[in-house]
Image 1 (tube, rainbow, N blue to C red):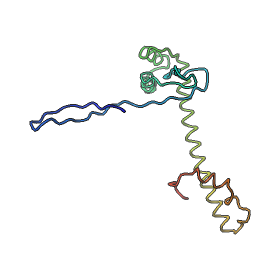
Image 2: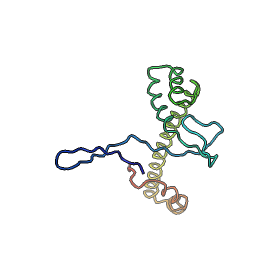
Image 3: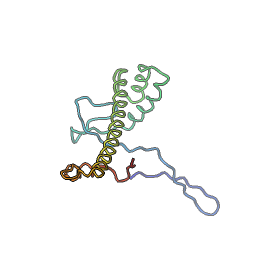
Length: 158
């Protein structure tokens, strides 16, 4: 549970306590997939298969991404090393940023493909109903039920 700082104001009628928001982000453990530990994480002391986030490094990395619009990779990596105390080379910084961009693109592509797949299944189901070829239909099979259960209920119909 995150505690909220409060500021007390006395307006003569008693004390008014105003909660102050904190910019504390909550980071989660990630599984360790390779032997290289990415910048912003350290190996979990209790379980070697997990990486624990280091808030200072992750926040500094987010700032570094903004600095890359004005400064070179070498300058930003030197700044990151100074701020966090953990060394990162300009090549390591470039790899980290490119891998994040790649992951973002992949996830958006997969979401788009899932949407297309869902629409294609609905169209095929409508076509089968129209033509009356539903004897050994794919849409009555367990496989279709399993596929359709993975789709969200609030998706848009086309």
